[in-house]
Amino acid sequence: QNPDLKILVSIGGWVWSDQFSDAALTDSTRQRFASSAIDLMLKHRLDGLDLDWEYPGQIGEDNVFRPEDKHNFTLLLNEIRQQLDALPQSADQHFLLTIASGANQDYIDHTELGEAHKLLDFINIMTYDLYSGLDYTTGHHSNLSPSNFTNDASRDVYASVDGHIKAGVPVEKIVLGIPFYGRLWKGVAPQNNGLYQPAQTAGSIIDYNVIVDNYLNKGFERFWDESAQAPYLWSGDSAIFISYEDPQSLALKLEYIDKKKLGGAMFWEYSLDKDDELLNKIDTHFKK
Image 1: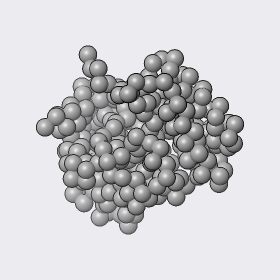
Image 2: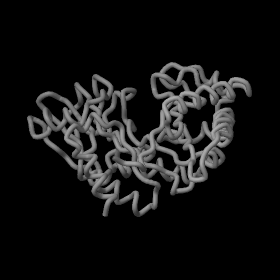
Image 3: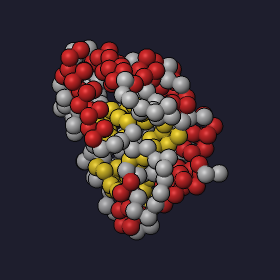
């Protein structure tokens, strides 16, 4: 139905990044990793590889990590790129190599994005989970701009994109991440309608489907943080706070992509938006 569709296999993620540091450690391990990944790609007749190492030089879920990861990541990408380019291919064929990058400055500091991007077709920034399952304080998990309700000006889309650009990544290679889910905190202090308040739980993932079906206008009040350009839900009765993406905040991000001349948008993940409300918003925007 769509001959232009490209399908890549993504390797890694939050749970399965524990072997990356070892795989990237030496010439021989990098060659073995690249060869096996490409074998998988060719077996399923795919169009490229995506690496989602969470995270080079940092612990991630509970991973082996080393200071050498910073440069070894670049070397690993170089090995994959060389092996991809050595494959027989037609004149109009190009095997893609991409990564999912962290949204914060720590990720940028532990990588060589200024060099790595030369080996990559584009970079998908995971501009979500800015407040997450590690935080016992509520906050916007994917706000476009800094909020006036906090002194932390590092957890927002603007800061993430600007950090990548300052690291040397061309704007046209930057793809902005859109969450099709929210983060929910329980036992939240009531000040400021729960925004940037201590909570008894960390922010758990909640599908956009579930938010619309069970929370929006159902005992929860929607608020709009004008400074952050982001919505949130609050119930004083249940002391529950929800940060999420909605069509209003998404529209502003899509306008930002155009204004900044970024490479596009990506999202995580498809099944969490069962009525395609957010997906259709993206699709309609880029078809203008």
